[in-house]
Length: 333
Image 1 (cartoon, rainbow, N blue to C red):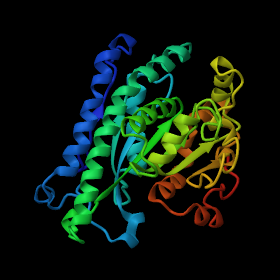
Image 2: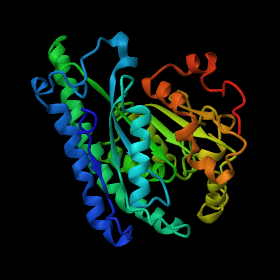
Image 3: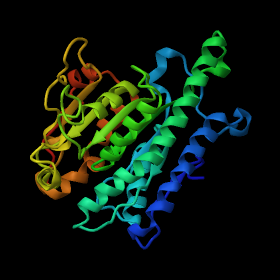
Image 4: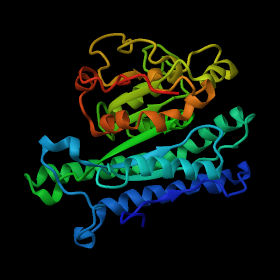
């Protein structure tokens, strides 16, 4: 328990930080799967007076509905850094009176060394099948409960109590990308089924044409689009880490987290347009004193209010018109 709320932390590395723990680390993803199912199936009476058991809300209050959020860290993250990252996000978004709900860390084997980019990318691919199992099981459970809610004819006990959301940072988006295409394929490629309500791609180390028809990874992009209600990419041209990433193994393909979407909206071969993907340039949110390397992780210091509003599901038009996507004033160094 943490501040009266249950949470699960699934560490994929021992404190040695060695990648030799890959097999046992990926297996711990099953703990995440079990936690999601346990939370959703729990007897409401067991949560009396506990805010972790979210109330059933009418459709008009969707923005206030609680979240079960999967947090996926990025490249070059040691065990200690992963736990610190998790605690930071929880304290910012998942604690106190304004808590969005529950946050669960999916920790995958990252070498935690500056020269570990390619090994980390390989580990991300190898861990994707375990996250696929999590998403696939969750998909089956959500579909069963959706049908039960429909058949109940409005029984509040059958109503959905929480939204599933994902926050992925840096190379964690690549791991999610590979897990999503595998889960989508396993479920016979359902169209427009919202397994994930809000996907927040922060400084995403994936191709910026991921969602464009005809792009090398567009099959992966299509899976994400069809399994997610809304996808938001936060990016900054000041991100020096992703500038280096684009030149390592991607044949010059720009990074989504550095340049934003290649096309707005993403290109398609025919109607309808892809309407559930958008991006926000966060460059002006960071003080000039934050250098290019630090910008890569600075979103979790300077764009938390924006993240909260996005995760709540506030319409993108409202966010843009209200000025939420623009830094209010020049941030002092």
